[in-house]
Image 1 (tube, rainbow, N blue to C red):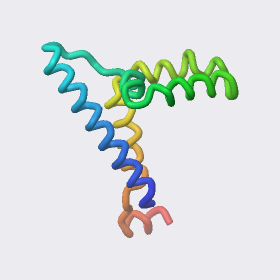
Image 2: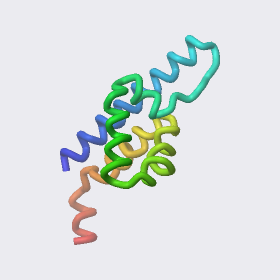
Image 3: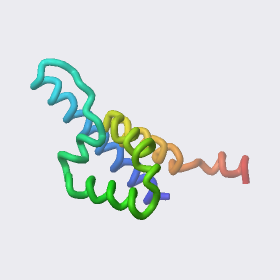
Length: 104
């Protein structure tokens, strides 16, 4: 599916941008420090981060935000974006006709 591959490439591009931001921050600070996904999201659009937190806690489930989503937001941004991007590229890759005949 072309849409899955496009989304995979966009996520991978965003992961590369996050890694570049982390590298520039390390260069400016003189020491490497991973930049968390939550920090990147806050720098890009703090209002949407706060709205997502309020919406999830009020309308979905309060327990989902605190142990679940905050754990993801503490991970490095390049990993949070890159892993799903790579998985989407792999999952939506073009398959050869030979592989289709084996399983179909």
